[in-house]
Image 1 (spheres, rainbow, N blue to C red):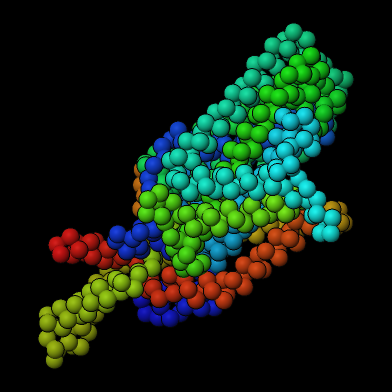
Image 2: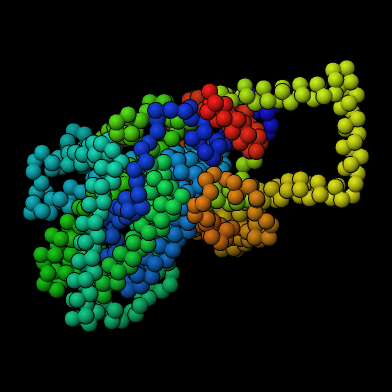
Length: 633
């Protein structure tokens, strides 16, 4: 894809879906652009955002449900395995976030590495994820708050839930009020909102530390009765423990909120990987320690599935601990609510910057330097859902957006390492410089050869070049540097496609219990063969040298490529396939709506509609000469 015909050919149809923007998106923005975010975040603030977005009230409920139904005393191992699985995605996020530190998270990475079509669907799915996620979290706060007022229905009338009989709707004013409160806080500024979230997260961690310390004291006093049950450490076997891991895996989603703030980080190459890794490590440690204590205090089959922690303390005479645990649950929900609403305005802003959404969403407030308009729209949508709907039945849709993002980020790592973009779009503002450069080169050639002898001189030069190429040594070098590289890129691209198709076939057939056993085995074997073949070829061939100059250097490098990203793709795809048909039908409706929005608006308004594509080296030269001329002027 060169200069000629690029602008027109990439304007519509299937080729429009494959348009990729450049890594350093700052170049494409005009100098002095007003839609810049303020760089305020440090490592400590990133950690509080990551921990606060990840540790929700689920840990106060999840330990009881998973221990009773799946893991038993092996619940700690379930949390460990799920944490390792989440770390695979975290490694991929860490490299891309440090290389491409711009707002948009998975949407931004997929736009750079894969193409506009996939990026649009990921961004559209993330919008749904954050809206429903925020509404569901807000809806869960009021029942916990009511416990401080004497019971489930004891909130003050203005905040209590009310049923509208003729509409058969239960409204929740408390949930809507909290969403508006968080929205207002986020509009004040990223520094202020991250400080508040940090305070709430620290208080929640203190509650969890109380559970761990006080629970350990009781456990040593009583002899850890929960680990002396008749069924042993694995009452449901290894399969039960793995099923528990799949369930608690969703307790780790949230660290992608850290990546969404990449543009607001002071030193993204250093701080983003540290923030993601430290937040995930803290969450995994807290989850495991809490599960060790609670499973040891009460036999797994006797746990209260709704209030496992407070009921465990009540069994040992500490009824007052219920209020402390409930406080922790409320704090965790408030922190998660902030973590759910924070990324969406930045996704909307990134999509609007690229022209896929109206420019209204890309406006940044001059004083606070946050996307206030996008934040307000996000808050209104989330508050409306939280007020009118019980979105708990839609919670599975949140997982679809997250797992799709995790999968695409892992695929992007493979593309970055093996077939990084070798051409980048040139904005219309620099196309004149590009044409002028080519015209100058042609004019210099004519001046050198003479106008009359231009064709004759050119043919003589061609003969000399052809004669030189006939030299065996030069011919071998040209073949090695060009033909082999082209062949390697094609082989790598086919191998990545083979991995993705193999994973999809393997996970789908393994989950299709309605198929006959022999058919499932045959299809699984075929999918596994495609997967292993693609993985084997990727391990055998060399990675692209262009990966070293891709994006910003000096950041985190994902280890164990290609094995680690392939494992990430496999795990996330398996979880996606097993989310259930009802969830996929609801998500499918939303994605179809997104397709129509893209066709009728995003495709034609994309900032890449009128660009031309040039080799990376040539683009860097043009940008350099442009910067130099601006400096001289």
